Length: 388
Figure (cartoon, rainbow, N blue to C red):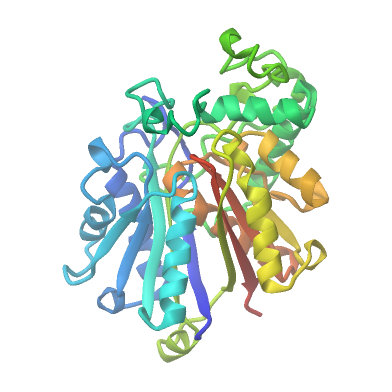
């Protein structure tokens, strides 16, 4: 099969996903359209050559309803002949869009395709599972004790792996420190597409310390769960969780042969894919088997990978992942993660792709892995190899 390559990957800045946030006044279709337009401007690709646009979005309601990928495509001025679809694999939606795009290219179904995603969490707020409606009600027969939301899952994981509050807050402070340093050095400039007058991530907080974060109250405390989950220490706060975020991202994917034909210079190859289900109660641990499955399929080991991007939905996720797989944290989220850079859920997969490619290029690395925990107990993992 023809290898799939990434010609370019871009993202908007991350805006705080609440009223008054830097991007809260921008319609989500316009956010995604900004990245779709940027790909054309940066690569010079004729949009009529694009076979499909696949975009992730989790909150497909309100301003993000009715196939927001198609709305964004038309907003960006792409020809009406170019189709689009919106996919939902929870937080891994854009990463799944990337997998679908690459697999379509590798199978010969596509020549040129755009993968990306969008989430405006200020306009379509994140609904805590069970707070509005009963999304888990049909599962009562299989899980009679009931499932819980992601925040409580993070608490359970922190408790079972004996992660204390200080360790979580220190990791969160590290995320801000790394991201702030890279932002100050201009290292995000290549991947960020300005939106209006917004040119930098609003979610980074320079100077954040573990001591400061230690003063925040737990977000998900529910003493009614204490008997069921005695291991919970109630350590998850806004400071060691990813913030609600507005943003979009997109990548242009094609085959090596088509890139050569069109005079394009690929930046990376997509050479391995995995997706797995996991315990929906501990829904955030799927990154562990997904990464292992990816390595098994590609015949690689942890030592063959130069950098890992493990989405920081909550601080316990990358910490538990690194512990279970024996990974040095110095190789994990080296430019900061979602705690600092934000987590616009439907867009995070290709946002992380853009950041990883930039890091490998800057450091002379060869291979990187992206993995993302997902609601309902799932995870994707992707192997990215730099084109030299």
